[in-house]
Image 1 (cartoon, rainbow, N blue to C red):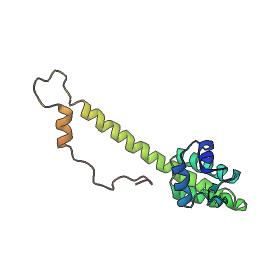
Image 2 (cartoon, one colour):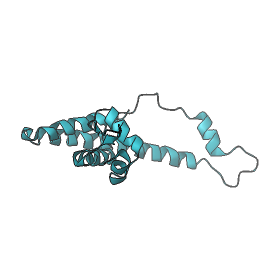
Image 3 (tube, rainbow, N blue to C red):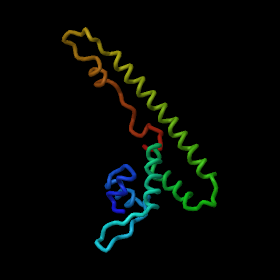
Image 4 (tube, helix red, strand yellow):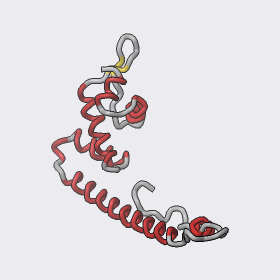
Length: 143
């Protein structure tokens, strides 16, 4: 199948297919006599796997590790379970960060007084005066 057919079957764009191919997550396709990419069912299966992993917010490194294990089925599930456990930890950290973000936004929202007459909006004033966390204070695996 051509790249457009593969992308349609996997519910993504042709740019996504090219990106995963370029990054090495998706194997390069054979070429037809007309120099078109010719993808097979194994490409679709792998692309769907990659897309499902991305839907679970996994990094390319995590996906690569899973693909490596998938390509060597005799290795068992231990490394996969470890990777998923670590990813759950990343998700829990992200949930904590998002809760903190929600709390900060709620605090900021409290600074708005709908009846204010001519004053600068309390939210805008709060955004001017708050001190953001230093870059790199996030602890998720996405950075």
